[in-house]
Amino acid sequence: MCSLKHEAAGRIRFFSDEKIFTVDAKVNRRNDRWLAHNLEDVPVVGKTKFPASVHVLSVVSSEGDVMPPHFFQKGERITKEVYLEVLKRVIKPWMETTASGRPYLFQQDGAPAHTSHLVQNWLSDNVDMFWSKDFWPPNSPDLNPLDYYVWGVIERQTNKCRHPNVNSLRAAIESEFATIKHDQLKSACSRFRARIEQVIEAEGGYIE
Image (cartoon, rainbow, N blue to C red; front, side, top):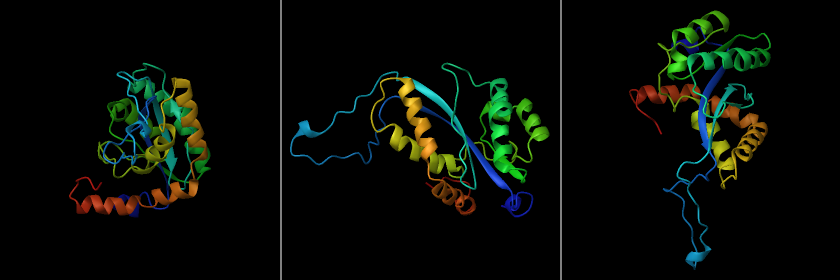
């Protein structure tokens, strides 16, 4: 809260996160209910034992900007070197272009590749401002707009049904990112400060 009032005041905030999507349809067993006269009318949702998947990274801004999703290679281990290369090639150029010379702030979670000295030192030297591993909570789904808004929006559409292959899944993810509503994303990001206050009131506990 102090950072938002002082060092980060007036800056564009860039939030980043990663998620694994699978080709299987997404089912929420707690609220997935069907009303039907015959059991045969209820659609069957199959589940693959080891479904093919894609590992996606994205960045959004507090002004509703969305970076096109970055897909890691199949079987690629996200080491500090791999992540740093993505920061250099993909994330920083997009943030610089989006910010257009305005001051900005970068956030990332506490994944080992993110908190390595290699990455932390590079961020310190090469981005306008970032929240370090000692500042940002290592696990913070209630505070990251990608966690509490974006991934849910994307997955509701991309995983309505099973995809025949990874290429189909990737195409669906790219399409949904391209059509995400910027005004709604900006509104979701504007709840960031209020959510911090709720987490503080919950003494660091989850609020959802």
